[in-house]
Length: 275
Image 1 (cartoon, rainbow, N blue to C red):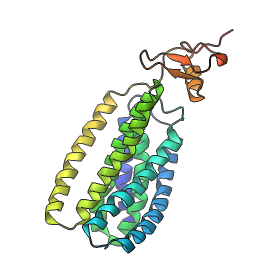
Image 2 (image 1 turned 45 degrees about the vertical axis):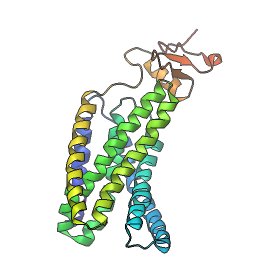
Image 3 (image 1 turned 60 degrees about the horizontal axis):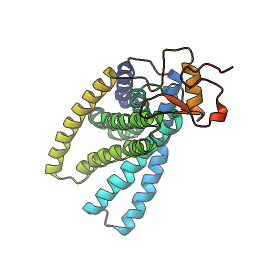
Image 4 (image 1 turned 45 degrees about the horizontal axis):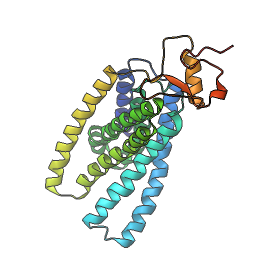
């Protein structure tokens, strides 16, 4: 029963984000893979956190505000969010299914909720039903909220790459990691300092960021658009050429062009094979 209580919030969030993807549903196999790798990233992050926190405790007083801030932002939040980021980037960046802007949000949420579900099992088995209820309301949705922002910037990075703007891609890939780390670190810091004022700040923050995340999901879902040209017979060829680095897109016009003209096997505008 406790394991069910631990996993149930994650399942509810996964169903909700899956339904929000209205344009084109993602392959179930890909989503399962993201979830599983999200689970595995929990183990890696846990080992890093334990080692780094122990080392930090030798240098700084574990009871100090400095220790709490460094531990929450630069160790716990960074280790956990980088693990999720790595999974999403590694599994989906060149996957053919990543062809709509909202896809990135779905991918990030599935990886993050996989992380949260596995982590939640340990907390709930130790803390019981009361812990299950509190984490169902706060912690598991907190991971999903961080993932919404990760996916938002991740999708922007992909769109900038598609149009050949690699400076924009680097910028938004950095934000896809930095923003969730700051959000996660602030969440943990508010709860770790054990100060009544910070508890009030935490609940105001959690309520506000939840509203923002829900609104952003609704907006991104409604405005979901294709990343690549579509609607003509050669669309699949164009996608394959892009995946292999044969073509890029003009950032001014959005039209495809050959990176290396000697590889002109297809018309980059129509995707039709050249005779």
